[in-house]
Image (cartoon, rainbow, N blue to C red; front, top):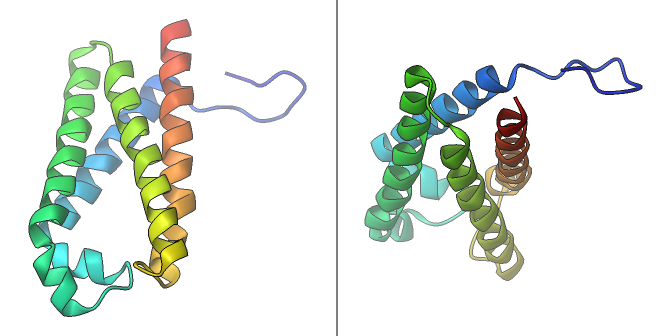
Length: 136
């Protein structure tokens, strides 16, 4: 798809859907494999990171289920949009919660700060890709 009045070519929405879903699955697997490291990257101490390992794994399972569901839907040729919208909703909530944690000092550092635009951007990409899939 080419944007009107621009030289920008948007990627195929089916390819975007597969990439978003696969990326979510990979990130979820990494979080599941190293939950303490993941929380430490948000600027918490090791003891806190160890105490919330269970919560971190819950987040990883959620994202993994959404990602794998999207990958399977794409492979089967079924509607990927609901999976993209579920991921976008969780990314939007993650963005708001992480922004509050950064603001009140519960999260800190460059990794946590850089996660904000990544989560927000992925939420927007998911919504836009779902909308493009519905139009095609």
